[in-house]
Length: 93
Image (cartoon, rainbow, N blue to C red; front, side, top):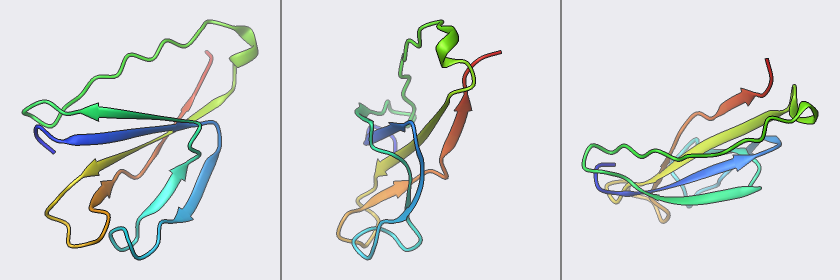
């Protein structure tokens, strides 16, 4: 949402939990809530999040799961957050 508010969810576990009737129909939580980062979108609806990940061999092959929730007052539900489809990032080379 332009000039809006979003929440980035970052987790180490993939989920597929229905968010229920308070959210838009079909909304699912797709990443564990290990880290949540509130974000302020710019006038184009974009935001950048620097996330330093250390270069450790112990992280090779690990997965990070991401999801973005956008506050959208136009949605006619109790908790008007649109949601992304989720993303998996595999660490390593």
